Image (cartoon, rainbow, N blue to C red; front, side, top):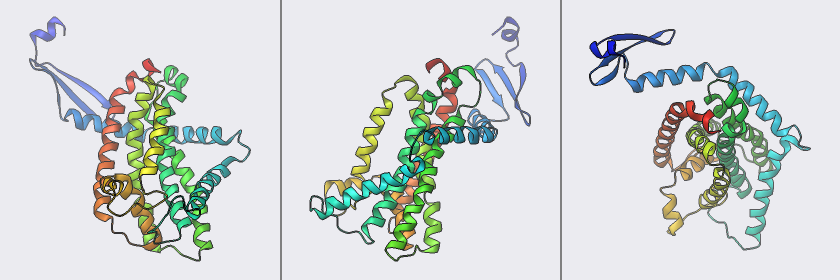
Length: 304
């Protein structure tokens, strides 16, 4: 602080963060204070303005990522259909061989597994892409000053696209088994996918920062995602009084995956209470992750 500022600790400085949001910064003996908005509310406004101003950039980055992912692939987007079919086929074979006995499924098992895998991949594919987003755009991050949040949002949409592609498989399974989704349940089930998307996005914000410092994060993440999928009722139900069943009472993925699946197929679910708690947790994770990313993004270029 200059000598003049020390002699006049109450001097005001007008700072304009956005065109419609003037902020007065007052230097007192206790330090700088923001008048008009609290620091938290000010940062939230700035975060929102930054996101809204990045819509076109997010779209262009998404198109770039989508094109590069399938450009040199012989089968292209068909891989998004083949992978769940192979996985479901393996579990069906294991079940018929008696190695893993799958019981308690109140719908055709193939339909159960395809929907569960599709929802899980919405999360896992998006989270992996978000984690690698900053490192993959290293040269752009260093040379160009732009809202880094656009990289994370664009990467998260890869999971959404793969889910949309796999809707074809889900529809085919309904037709194969002569079933029809509950119309209202289908609508509510799709709405119920937003919490798992926001959970993925919140964790993606944080892991993208960590990956900028530790490149091993991606390998650890892949192993962690596989373990969580196997311990969560994604492709087989977990019930009874086993230790795993008791642990899944506290597992948010149990509710974020099974409630949408139940609504889509049956139009109802008994997991509503657990789902709401999991949805609240997802939103908290999203807001905290976004906040941390916003505060740390100025240091990203130094670490990449």
